[in-house]
Picture 1 (cartoon, rainbow, N blue to C red):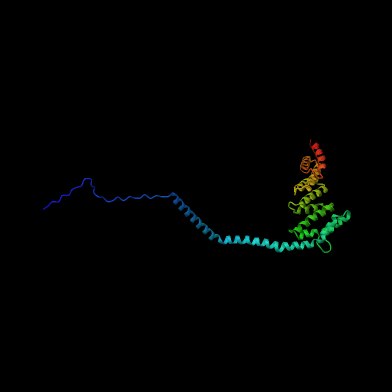
Picture 2 (spheres, one colour; picture 1 turned 90 degrees about the vertical axis):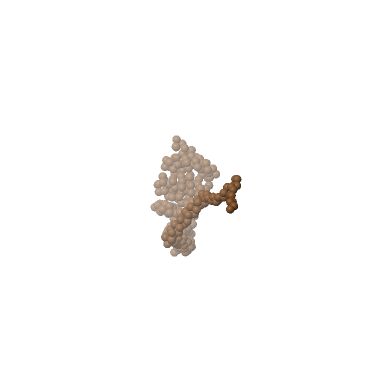
Length: 266
């Protein structure tokens, strides 16, 4: 029997099963954060959708109310104010005619013409009625101004009515608003309330500032302030004329009065 020997070769190592290399999982923080953001957005979107579903009727009502409000405002302007404005223009012809005649007249005739303009004639409304009936229109607003100026020119026991109408007039920042404010000042002076008139003259000067009405009303404010002993207001008004309106007709008078006012203040 032949015996077969098994030899180990030098350096030979027995084969072993290859070790499994476990791959480490690599996590990207940015990917995780992004996922969280999208998750949050999804939750927010879901909540928004739920809120919209619950409040859908309310939202529809709110939008409808806004739309109806805008439509009503447009309809009121288109179908009420505009026709009313046209009607008012037609109605003012006689009142304007006598108001213009009164402006160019004197004495008792002047008062009579203003009265006709105020009360109406020849079957047409006067300024008083136009102001009332067409309130909210430009024509009604101008009639309010004219009524105030008519009462101011008539004077006497009509001064309070002049003040009331001129206060009711809304001229924004126009020259007419400036004249209306000065008219209130004039009425107060005539009514013996000079101290209250100064602020209206100052308002008149500061409304729609220009080279003509501003120095005119600053001078009036200063003159009335001096009569009431309000020298500081007089000085301020006169200095404004001296500094800002050297070409105004009131400039020389303002310089003279300024010297007097400054002397009285010392």
